[in-house]
Length: 277
Image 1 (spheres, helix red, strand yellow):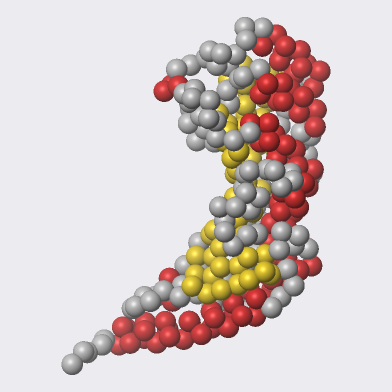
Image 2: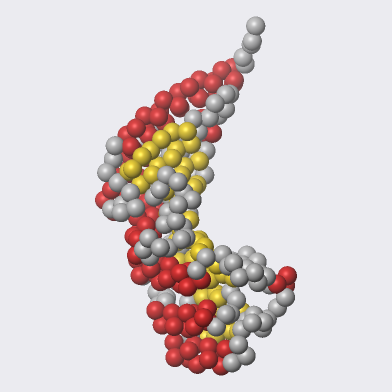
């Protein structure tokens, strides 16, 4: 004979009650314009309802009106989940994918309308990069508890260093009036030690366009990590960077109206892991 305490019985009843509700929500989302697929991933055994998951794949060309409707339906009933995933591809390892995996602070399936509209914009920026872009965009913006946050946080990586700047430019053109925190890593295969990043923290009114020639040239000259903070550009020199690079970059910074900080070469073990850490 198995005896269940009252609290255990209530817990198991909640689990049974939440699973059909989550499956019903996934079914409703699956039929919406802009949704490619939606499915509930139900945890088995004696677990809390909050250990269930919801997975939603949206069209890469998601429209704003459809994004708002998806967010609205996701909040109907506010089913408890531990994790939600929203992506533009069912296989999130596919290049060109935009992905957000979140543990909602609300503990429910309710998606942020503002965040989902922004995800549509991020996907539009991804489309600008073309099918040959090998990176993905990871975003963090879909919890309603974060709707009052103005900053858009995006991370990516690429085996082609120049594409990291292309991606930043595309995102800035898609969001010209939004604060942006961009974190990119060059997946270099040249055998050299250390990690190279492109990082940008832009306020809502910061203009990226004048800085593009400076950053592009810095990358061409074989510098290390480049970090942008509005009109301040910090460039890490490497041992292999040409000795005349500083003079050339200083001239380009002056033309752009930017402040330039140049960091001397450091041993790989002495370099910061990333500008945002």
